[in-house]
Image (cartoon, rainbow, N blue to C red; front, side, top):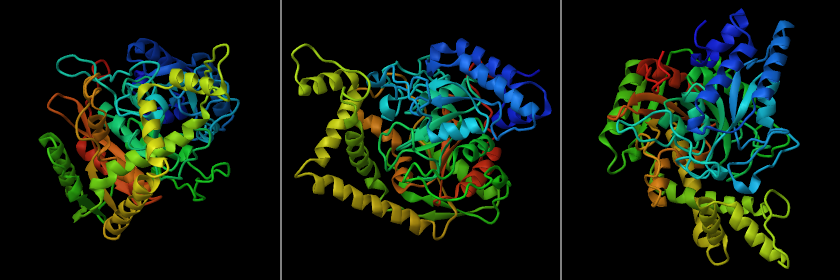
Length: 492
């Protein structure tokens, strides 16, 4: 029997269907891998007993001929999704010990389709970060190593999910993407990350960061796996007013391998100043791959791209400051209160003790831009620019089927690097934020290695609710790039 932790989701699914192994055997192999890779700190909460129980139930379902799309497949769940009876922390001290009495819609969909939960994956606190170094539960370490042997960040905020998949600790994982939190860590860890269209997957039961941007999506080893998992996660949810009442197509069937009738846009504004030459070369190679596959490559312009990052860092903190107001020590999580303290004292002490520095920074920024006197100057103006950014994409998609761009401006960097410069850290999201502001689907595909031997990804952006085209082009790019490199210890 092959090493079960090296299988893709599709291979594992097909092996289970043929009876090559059981879900219990598959799950046990991944539990052992979790134990062997605890040094990476990819999980906040491991649930091995629950996983085995779910795997046994799944094997029983399969024996009755009742297998779902993800039947018996062990996955990691980002610790931002509420899971009934299992601690859900959002990587924050303020939610430590919180056990929801309900299940998020996305995890409900996955479990109804037979998925097995291995545990809750680490992340940046409340999904705020580009490096997964702001978690109360400690840094996640990228399974890849630099030539100097330093520990690297896995990217953020879904860094635990990305590391778990890259290190063979899960066949796949859920992530959430607010400004690039699925695509950027996927690029840093050499896996595939898909942010669906805003509204494609329900946000009900996901701890909110920025409500008009947050979107759940799959993090997987291959594009086909992303198609399989998205089909099991997506769907309209009456409990979420932002969930779109659109049909869920057969995403896997979209992987035809044929893009000869397609036009791929190349936005000139993404050639930013001082971009490393290896990123330019990666992008040029990707353009050549799609052209060789028969697609027509077309130059497009997205003129408001230069305002996207500034717009994002007004809109997202503003929404965060509102969403996180509920964590006050009274209704949720940690409470710090000394004898004789007033209600205000309790609020201040609970929030000061419960929130980390990055969360406090973003709450302060958000509170400032929403305050009287600055609301029109910052927040309202940002919303108008956001509309312009969406209109840029709409105009471009009048002539092209998808857009190709880099996922991140660099490979993974060392833990601790950029920590003293939040603006430099925020620039890691420069290529992913525009699609998030426009609510468009984005797919990161590993397509090359840096000079240091670290994975680099290219990003495909599509029209609203056209994940099929994004996946179809992504599949062609994946085949042409033939990215087979793996972190040390994961080869073969």
